[in-house]
Image (tube, rainbow, N blue to C red):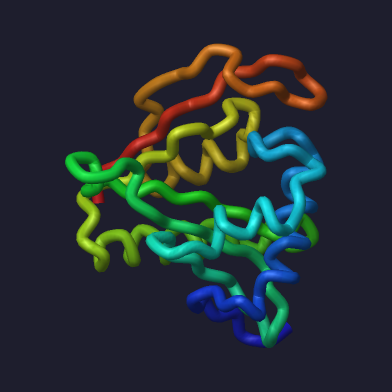
Length: 163
């Protein structure tokens, strides 16, 4: 293992990014995306103008990624939104936390005043714990808003923090 760096994603990263995307959404436990979503449909979510996308790179191997954009347009554009995915084979190495802390710094640098996560699945206890650890609060609960593959309908949280 080399030295992990966080850098802007490039078009050349997409194949590895999509492999992570597929592995994460295949579980049907954390993201609303269909497990059979195509590369062509998934790509604009990550790599599109107006969205900042970063990867955790370990000597050419993508370990995880995040995307950041304004949560809303115009009069709500001072609040950022972000999504994170880590290669399931790399869990437990603090990659998610490293990406999250990097994202908060990038959001501040970009002039955002706060960050909001619109849809954190309540049963995704690792994510909920991480977001709380770095200062996010649950500001709302969406009852039975997520169709969990194993548990059926579960709540989703709206989480928020000022930067």
